[in-house]
Length: 386
Image (tube, rainbow, N blue to C red):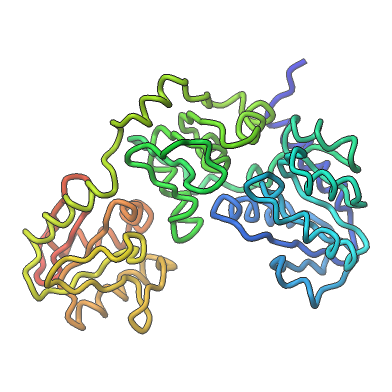
């Protein structure tokens, strides 16, 4: 009998809450990771809001030295594979400091000796997040299975109409690609925050990826997701366990070969050439440019034009604004200080969708130019709509 996906998720939620129980104190231990791991943690926090415990703490895994308590939850993720297997070395210390330990839903590669030996010795309750991992660990430790923490996140604020293709393949040791496709954006490593990461996914209609949580977020936001496996079983196993009812399918071998031969979206180098030509044409020498997401494009500079981070504090990049009011206030402050232009390069165009009040402020007051799909630039020297 086929289980309804929502019923399946509810069963998983109740299983985790039952396993956690109502301890006298509870500590969530976060592992180092990328923005996909932040999504897991955000969903886990929402799940834990239903736990009957008044003393809930959250710490980084490298802050264990001063910690002791009753129940520890080790955040779920993929840190149990050949490319990333730092978690086994931490587990004995966690178990020495807490009476109970639960490893939240994760993927496990027991072909890695350290992973297999650590799970064979642990007294923790270990949750897999898909059937292949569960089958691999069930004979090694006290094991169960439940949905990944990202499934408990509230995606409703990010639903929107969308267009275009996001190519978001990983660029680290877990990749199985010979080379990433042209136009690739490894947003899990390059976006500045989870909100930006989610808005980047939300504004695209079709997602191509080998990142598990780009795949999960895209699918749960109603996108067409086409995935490729990374270096082990994680993605296809997650699809089989929790995403089969959504618009998710593997990328064909022919399509993968074509992507690696070329084509697709412009490369970053090609986009930068277009951007440089545009700015040399529309921004006079000696002008200063407020550069949204300053750190994303590295040391790229335009001759005889000053590049200033936006937002900034003491001349250093300060990330995304908390809201429209802060964005407008900081824009006008820096404009009064002499900034001449505001630039939103392609990784930051999500600002115009997310900060609608800020976008309206810009459109109503300042002339706008487009750099052939790779950026939007506003002339702050004079007022005037687009």
